[in-house]
Length: 289
Image 1 (cartoon, one colour):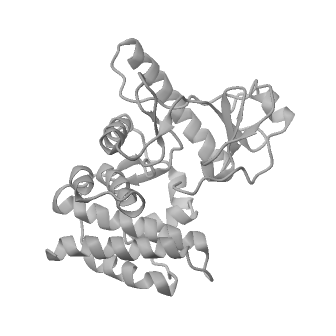
Image 2: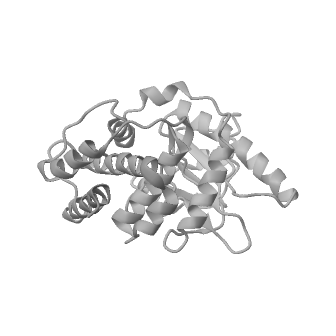
């Protein structure tokens, strides 16, 4: 999920975990990954959120990696994904840890918005036939709650300093009609670029929403954190329907920020200011200001 870079806060994987995944060496902390990822022997290990979700995701990404390898042979690949490492037990989770092969590349996103959107759309085309996983309904992490608020499936209280921009976004929100499928809800910092290679899509954040919503989240991140202008919105979320997706994307990011801060705290002042300025800007697009 979109976060400041952190060093791992969880315990490092044990020698038994490394051995189960066929790895050797000393784990080295990695930035990002919600502060929990480590690198060992060319693989990235991180704690599993849940065995059910992690096993499902690893099976899916194994299929996608196989398809990407086949596409490379045919010189027709649009994206790469990290290949999950299977443990000696036969599953993809061992003692609460997962492992994926490290993929080469550096994150954008500045100056690469079009490439991020193109890679994301290709990634989503590969997921069109993937069934909706039942466990999505049981997710209660801050981003899952924020996503439901964005789509008017639940309500939450936010800190007083975020109530005005949230109220403004809720006032702007109107019904939309678009098919839903499995999407990646956090593409912005999770598309990697390397010379001579297709973009790599990492750190899958699954939601069951329209593809246009995933694009709009990229635009929202650009507006909030990267000084992007209306041109990105017009590219990522064009037209009236796109603006409605952008409204939902901003609600998603705002509520997630509030949920992460906790019920008795506020997000950092810089984040609060970003939401106020960005929401006022977007509101102006609706009113012609």
